[in-house]
Length: 636
Ligand code: PRX
Image 1 (cartoon, rainbow, N blue to C red):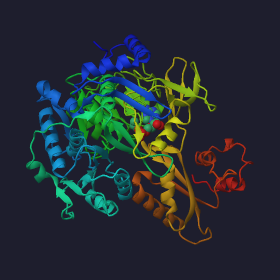
Image 2 (cartoon, helix red, strand yellow):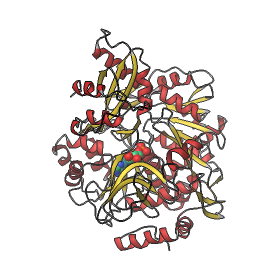
Image 3 (tube, rainbow, N blue to C red):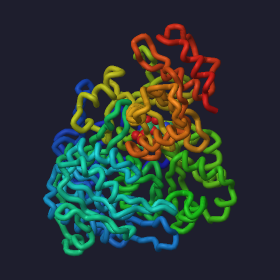
Image 4 (cartoon, rainbow, N blue to C red):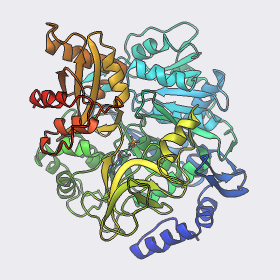
């Protein structure tokens, strides 16, 4: 019997050691005993980080939806797979059983096929958090189409870039979406995007808000009538272990987003195994992850990980503040949630409201609390522990990335003693390393460096869509023979890891990963802007907010600066989305640069942080005089 479910610390260490000593045997046992395969593998692992090439379970054949749906029908047909909790608390929640989910996924898959979608085709899913989002995702997997889910809060430009980058043939969307008290015209955004996406042949539209929209003849189709005519049965496509399952875009330090490619077998095995252990999920539990399926957290821990374990997973359409800041707690009480997984930015926003709203609701069902997306600060950790978990539900501070596919460093609840702000220990099979600036591994404890991973794990991304060279350069070139995460971390005296934050040009705002370059590119499109640089600065709810330094083309120009700020944020909103708007915009005559012309973000960051005592030696700059000017005019 393999150690699928770890229950105490000694067992963790024992299983961990085995997973490191004999990774192939270890993962083979897990794969063998807990999943169904059309054909078993010929080889468990083949890898070479110098190419880089990583293959898990080569030769195996399977369909991930048979593991998430079909195999549960014998024992869990009537068990709830998905609880849909709508934006409006007065609208009833919907309980979708495993049998119903199986039937709805087949219907959707049959509709996709009727629109000419075949194995390997890319399908873009731009749908709000309603059941059709999960169903469309699974329907693609059912027929072997590669899904590319785009967060339905992204702008038309961001959507178009993602559709074109991977040549999607079909887009799934909705007429509109609810977000708290607001509605959003999703179909309008899609129409605008598609003006520059010649490769899209069809658009399937879910009716959600019943708004007036335009439907383009021959291209756009209402989904419901097509579903009504589709069979609830359908053969799952037989996939190779390494066939792509999905593409998910993440920001990088250059303008073009990176389409991370995840493949089938390894992703399934690792997300299912981590879900079971990190949330200590038991058969009758109700699990809730508040992320959007548009992010990796939703892919791995709303859809695939939970469903592969036959779990009940909540899909929440709303926001934490609507109709008031008690909504999360109301949902926990209503559905008797056992595991609750959210982000530090949400915790901080809720903590600001005081404890009254939390105390109003019965949260006694909770057993495990999770945090993900950015470092959780000590204050937020304690607030979460005291007020939500009542000091009896362990907090799992889970560190991972879009690229890693699944949780990498985390406590196992009731197993690993937690420590505020520490992600604690590597998960089973994960071999972290901390590196110094010269490329030497820092051994032993009480060290701080750049976080790398030394050995492949099953759910790692295999490439960047259409750009393997960029994959190699971004993740495998900084340190020989290692995957570089882009994060800094320290290892304390007992070997616990604490993630200290990004060390590259990515800024995490409210848990959203934002590259500086695409935002600067957007700012620079404003006709009055000559050049710009953005940095993050600490913000008590968002974690980080954005501070922009902008050089205008004609600085003496008498244009109203507040208007300019509004226009710049408007452009950012259109190009990327409202999440990327700048909190502060300082107009300046220059940016500090090295002699080779590189912007010294370190200095700009210090100024934005109001940390002026440690600017360091600025005399080697090309233009040291601008530092004083920028400091003098710094915005509070
Ligand atoms: O900097 C780390 C931070 O989020 C980055 C990954 O972002 P993304 O690909 O959007 O995936 C987020 C959800 C998995 C990481 O490089 N991060 C994520 N989780 C944590 C974290 N930083 C500190 N602690 C965490 N628990």
